[in-house]
Length: 155
Image 1 (spheres, one colour):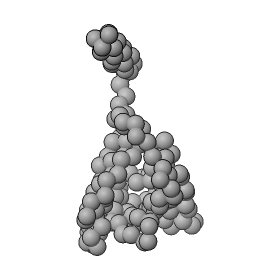
Image 2: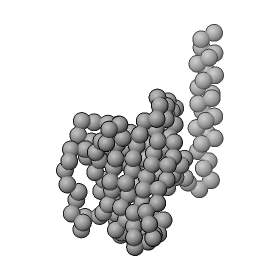
Image 3: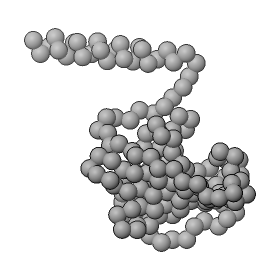
Image 4: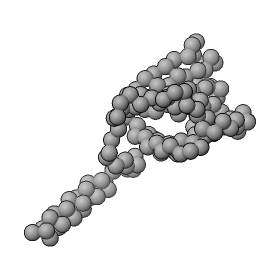
């Protein structure tokens, strides 16, 4: 599914597919995108994030996704929306993420977005929201205390 510009994404390429984990604001979702040429699922099988199939076009990974769950209605789209995503390495630290949305039932013509995605070595934490978000200050305070204890032990 098209990514929010601030979404955190992990991607791992395997021989027969790409495993992608999206940490969007409202859901963390894993997807296996086959690259082995297998056909898409039957149109009666609909998944929340659709059924994606990938292929390489030169240095660009192209993922075509359809069969979205009827309740998804991403940006008001119909269940027959088709999403074409392109991932192209621009340089050692930048991946161009370009997606095109095709849904004649919703929009007069397809539309495309391009977002540069920056590589990061920082850990990715799951987005989790709960009433008050009280845990985070306590978690951070505990880690700061552990850091001080480790520093003191080194002296």
